[in-house]
Image (cartoon, rainbow, N blue to C red; front, side, top):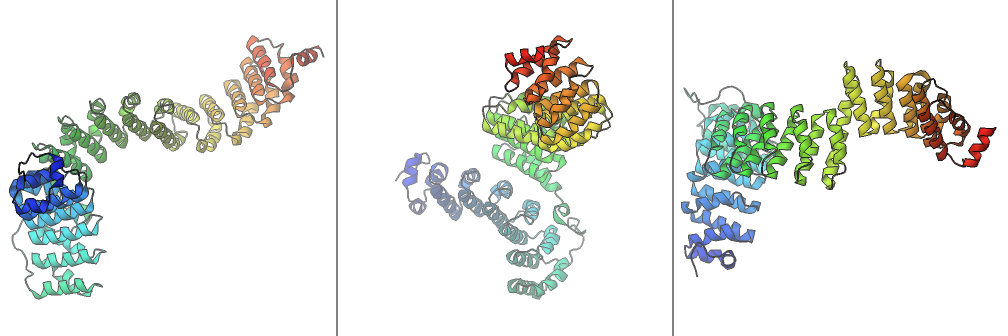
Length: 547
């Protein structure tokens, strides 16, 4: 059998890994891990390397922590624990894996290695959503034996899962810190017999002592994430952003985003210039998770990155931050060649809450990609509530723009607030409100618009006539016929147009009379309106004009 580490992947897949192990063919096993198409073979190779415990395979196992198959990542974490200290940094990063079983094995491996650098990350893992991760983190902290973990392990004695409580009791017994005495005594009444037995065993050992003159021990109470001093972890991750290993830089950037500490903002901004696109992508995403406005300018620059992955994540990050400075650059991004970028640009524009984005989002509703259209539609819907609130602004310009934007969006939720806004003190605002109600064309606005038509003057009255024509409700016919006699030609013009749109025969005679109006534009609209009425032939019009 060939033992060359460069044998091709297809041959590697046919090998019996147990045979490779028996022949101590380490390069062959490593090659299976790196090249086998079958994830079960890669998983078995990782496990075998852990069993052998050869430090020469560390690099391959570290690479396998990025495998697409979580079972391969899980076995690789376990194997790295068998190898020891060279893998510490990578196992700490693996605590942040999206798959709980990988996190669990990483925690277990860190416990075997026993390095104090893992204490902080393991303390955070005690708060993980997965009980098995919390359990193995507690066990690992007990093996490492660092007193900084005591208070959080005491909290874990109250964990909802009995297996976590068992490991916490065991770990506190191993640590031997007298702060655990009373909590362990209380654990003697735990509902789970296993917890009671382990707590009793810990107390029987009688090794719980007070640690004197240890400045590293945190004496004040802990509570959730706020109780963990994350400074060491943050500093370690920030340093990892400068690692020669691209995988470490990428995962450090991701973890900093998950921790959402503002100290990471500037280092992550610098990481936006990394040579690897995947690391720039991770930095963009993390800056969005942190949500600090210091990142806005750099993220706007990242919108022009050569990688669409980076542009996409930068757009989403800017949406999460929600700064108005990003509106114009994000609007330009709606023309990006990559549809995934356009999708997130549309989403991000909706998050800004700025009415200026309505027009560009309306255009995006015609995008060739259905997901872009969907995101643009959802973004427009998100703008409705902020715009409704803006109708009550002290600034008339803001109220006017809000009404105009609500009309363009056309969401029915805006109808009642717009009807209320018909009472606005500013005539220009009322014009905008009337136009918006016409564009939305909800029947509930008909009566309020009729009231405006009868009580207002000038352009507000004109716009009310036009809006009623857009809604096309027969209730507006008589009020519009009355408006044909208005002293302002532009009111008569739009009333004539509106009657044509509604198409009620009762408007025929009044419109025929309007053919003699002093204004040519009014005459034109009257003629066009007549042409839209049922049973209104040229012969009929001539007869009516003679009568």
